[in-house]
Image 1: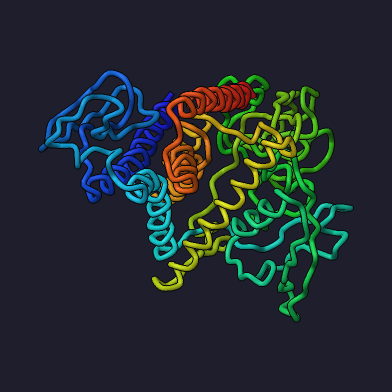
Image 2 (image 1 turned 180 degrees about the vertical axis):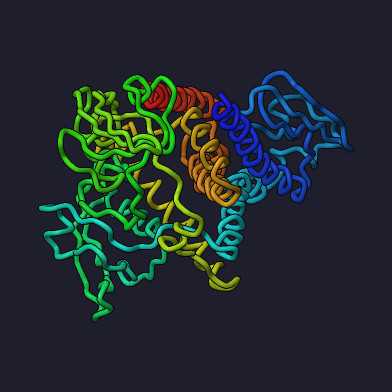
Length: 455
C-alpha cells in the first residue's frame, strides 16, 4: 500500500511540476508580447484553490492531467475597445506563434537544466563491463567475451552500462550495426566488434538484451535468502529468510543468479529444494512450485524471494559515474535531449505506419508507477525521470495535431503561406479530428497500462 501512495504522490508532484513549467512558458511569453492573461490553471475541472494577483486568476484544479492559460480572446468573448491591443488575435503572427511554441520550449529547457545539473553532480550507474555472454548469441558470434569493458560505441565514449543500453535501444528503432570498442580484462590492446541489432516492433530493454545475449558484470550474491514475500510461492512452500539454498533438483547451487535462472525456466513446475537452516545447519528438503508470470521476455517462474543485502562498499566495485564539468555538461545535455527526441519521433512515425507495436505507448498508470519507483530510489533518479517525461511532453505537444500546440503552429504556418488565417470551418473540422486522435491514443495507452498492471 505504501508503494501505491508513493507512486500517486510522486505522479502528482512530478506531473504538476512539468505542467506548471509548460503553462508558465505560454504565460510568460504572452505577458512579454503584451497579451492580457485572464487565468493560469494547473489541472482541469473544479478549482481546489484559487487566488487573484493583479489581472490574472491563478487556479489549482482537481484533475492534474493538464493545464491551460486563458488569454483575452475575441473568439471567446467580447473585448472592450480599450483592451483591443491586448487581445490575442490582434497580435502579429510571429507573436502568436511564439506564445504557442513557448510551452513545449520550456519543457525542453527544464530537461536541459535537469540533465546539466545531473551531469555536474554525476549520475551513478553500473560499469560497462561485460559479465556474461550467452552461448550461440549474436554477441558471441561477433567475438565479444566476458570480462571486457566497453569504452566507446560508434566512437562516442561510454562510462556506464545504462549508456550502452540506451545506444542499443536507439539502434533497435531502425535496426543497424553498433561498433563497440572493448578493453579486454587482461589490459591488452582495445578490440572492436561490430554488433548487429535488428529492427524491433516492440522496443524493450529486456527483450533486446536477451536477444543480443550480453549482460553487465554484477556482484555475485550469496545463495542465502534475505527476504520472503508474504503469500508468495516461497512462503507457501515453507522457505524462510536466512535459508541457504544448497541444491535444486539435485543440482548444486553456487550463487543467487544460478538459482534465479533455474526458477525462471520452470514456471508452474515443482522443484525439489535442499536448504540449510539455522545455526545447527539443519538440512531440509522442500517442494517449491514457482508461480508463472508474464513478462516482456515471455512466461517465467517467480518465487517471491530476494537475496541478502551486499556488505557495505561491495556495490562500489561494480559502479561508475557519468560525470562532466559545467562546460562539457552543456554539450552532453543537448546531445541527450536530441537523442531522446529523435528516437521518440522515429517511434511515433513507425507506430503510425504500422512498423512498431502500439504497446510502446504508455499512459498515466505506467508513468505513476515509474514516478514512484524512481522517487523511492532517490532524488537523482526522480530528476532523471522528470527530464525524460518533460521531453516527451514537449514532443507530444509539438505534433501537428489540432488541439495541441503543434496543431496551432500548423495553422500559423498555413496562415504565413496563404497570407490569411485558416477558416473557422477548417478549425472546427480540425478540432474534431484532433479530439478523435487524442481519444484513440489515450484509450490505447490506458489499455496498455491495464495490461501491464495485470501482468
